[in-house]
Length: 258
Image (cartoon, rainbow, N blue to C red; front, side, top):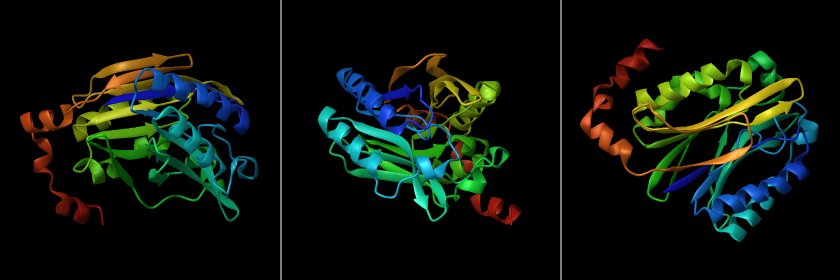
């Protein structure tokens, strides 16, 4: 399976413009024979608290991306904002090449440090889907700092996707935490970030594909672009060679965390 990670330069709150530009990225990934392309968190609006501008209730972004998926015959993962009363939900949806929804995830950990929790309702469920012989788990940005939720799906997935708007000033945290999630869960971790300025924040990408041994095999810095990664059965092979996950004591952990 060939995966594309689109390190997108998001024009802040310019949804229509970003959606038009995204079509070129989808077309490029398809031309390179990628099976699926992933965009960053809040892919076409940027990390905005202005739910009245970015939010939607009619699924307009899903409808546009469905057209792209069908036209270019490629699966697409993307972030968008769903209105939920006065607040929004920070969503990430994956469509297959026919436009069918494979998964929809709502960010479990709003970023309180920036006030996201005041404008967005926290999700309460993980999201796992199967595609092209692999099983994926979806996460968004700040979720990366909470290994507990990654562990809940580790036994079921061989690829974890983290879509983010992660600023340049904390990019070393991003790099190290992605590697840690891959190592401890013995699976692929795909981190896809945005790039350039949004309001007062600078993003420098560092989108990367990390194998089950914690090694970065593809990475892109400081510019918009797409990186590609071939994913095979590395997770299963590594888990067979070094079966650390079998020694987990899940019931004990539950008791200790009560």
